[in-house]
Amino acid sequence: MSHDAMTPGPLDSRPPSHNGGRKRRGAPRKRRRGLKITLGIVLVLLLAAGGTLYWMYSQLDGNIKGVDINKALGDDRPEKLPTSGQNLLVLGSDSRAGAENKELGGGGSVSGARSDTAMVVHIPEGRQKAVAVSIPRDTLVTRPECTKADGSTTPSANRVMFNSVYSQIGPACVVKTVEKMSGVRIDHYLEINFAGFKDLVDAIGGVTVDVPQDIRDTSSGLDLTAGPHKLDGTQSLAYVRTRHGIGDGSDLGRIGLQQQFLLALLSEVKSQDLLGSPTNSYRIANSATKSLTTDSGLASLKSLAEFARSMNGVDPSTMETIMLPVAYDKQDPNRVVAAQPQAGDLWKAIRKDGTIPESAKKSPATGG
Image 1 (cartoon, rainbow, N blue to C red):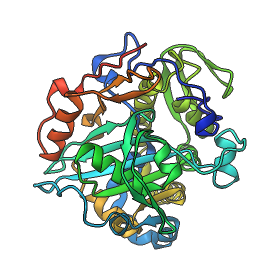
Image 2: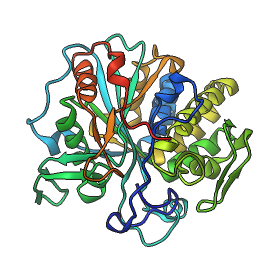
Image 3: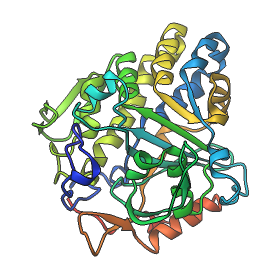
């Protein structure tokens, strides 16, 4: 990882990240497993509770942007799950498109976008629980041959940073890369950008988090003492993206904050009973859908709400968050690669809609 979380520069100019770890010392074991969580999941959970109101908000359809993943990928894909389970790829994009996204991302001359956060969300048959597998953005992967939006073909490449696939080719290639590395069929795609994250937090009136230690990030301006703080949208974005303000400055080091924030956000929604008010429901949905991109199968409020309603039985408090097991790359210890056999065992369990073994949740890359 490289540049400051709030002012990332071009990929080829960013200095290597420090050796990082996915755990903070002293954090509870269960929380330490958490990795990158994006607001796409929150949107699905919100709509799951308020999906019956979608007919009132048909005008929100125009907010949602769609990507035809199936057309872009063709038939050379993994088999669908042998059950009714579903797999979603959820991305948090650091797009600088638009003045608000550029300002929130730190401005500068950065063009395009990268997948700032990424995770595969597996909803097993019965849809009573969910597992989120986060993919570190600095993971070196083999990018498969992909077709760009203009129809041109980009050849396969080895040892490519995972987060560069989005900026170089586009979302369909990210889906294809995940499918090739995991053997898991991705059924749906959700993406939310900087502005969407900020606006969603502001729409619910801020989120209170218990900051685990003093955070002073001179790059982003985030300055928080240990203890409870109610953060607005801009502060929340800085909180989940800070690297230099906590831990060893690596991408893996900030994962605990992101998991903590997601849980705090869901608690805030529940405590305020926001979905009990049509006005508040509309405000939240409008904020989220304005910055939402989905696969074409979900690219309408009706389809998104129906899918979310099917997940009504999923309790956010039981959602398990796992980091893709990674090890430091032998050629470049500032990068990581999927650790075997742990990663293979994890993906195998998801492909079969089975129980993930505890051994598949442990990552050799555990720097501080």
